[in-house]
Length: 478
Image (cartoon, rainbow, N blue to C red):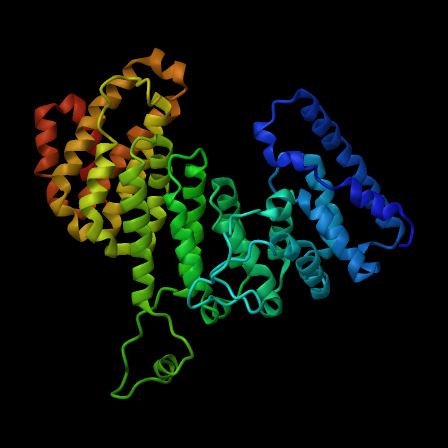
């Protein structure tokens, strides 16, 4: 394709640098220019698509041209103020012939080498060997990694990198490892929360395809875990809740692929070890259960309990995000979470207590109810996973649930307040979860039905029969 049409179209797709500070722009003239450019992108992408159709498709072009087109169009595949639903759809239609498994490795290498690597060359990551992609034993003595940051002026770089990560075949990772990892780690370890959040999403894309052995052999598994753990220190930031919700599942995915849960070996049928057990013993790198538990403990104990719950107590949205993620972490760690019950039970039950005033001016009713609902979900998971220890905490849980039930009856009776806040569905879910928590607790501690639950009914049967009356029948049916 020798005509100047293609270069002109690709130039028209270059995202203006002003989008890097779009949320801070106040100049009406600049905003109007950006809006006009944004509206014109659809025309440029449509022209590019039609041009490629007349040239037998993008795969008929040279490697360099395919890489140039992919790098320019992938900018519109992902998040960004410069992207609309229509431009995203057009970009995907153009990139579709190059998506895995159709993309040639040479095209990916060209994009990583000529379009991404130069943007990050001025800020080498201090913990990586840039030639091999391996973790350095000691941080390199380099200039400030945050100085300059040319890559932040290349708008859409994260989208291009994300597209590459989602389309690299597992067999290709080895050859491009040194090109992929530095920009991913630069995003993940950035000091600004929006870029760090983008880095977490890039790591998630990376983990969906990378061979686990490559992570462990290069030492990057530990480096990623350390950096992901550091994202929980970004508190008091508008992006903190999003960071928590992205970092927890990504960290769990990393733990799962680098130290998967070990299955209990079947009992031997003779006095000699079975062939399968012998193979496990002589395997190359069997999973270490201690490493898995250590990482899960760090995520739960240090990141969520020791950081978010301890230091972000004044940010209800951050606490809500961390509470939302608790069931996922508890399901992974299982009975091992019992060592944190002294922190978990008070945290979850305290959220159920009625606020001093309803609604609170510092915490709207909607946020307060969402936190209560989330706390009950986490509490149910906690009761299930740590059932053998629930007899030590049943009184604390019953006390909080009883108070919460009385409070929700007051909220429900104030129909005007519920309708004004739009919280009617939340109130209904909240009541259902309170009843479910009582059932879960009765399953873990059967004696509670005849003791504590009976005391509640004796105290006020009209109030508490709806809370615990169904617990005995539900547990007896199982």
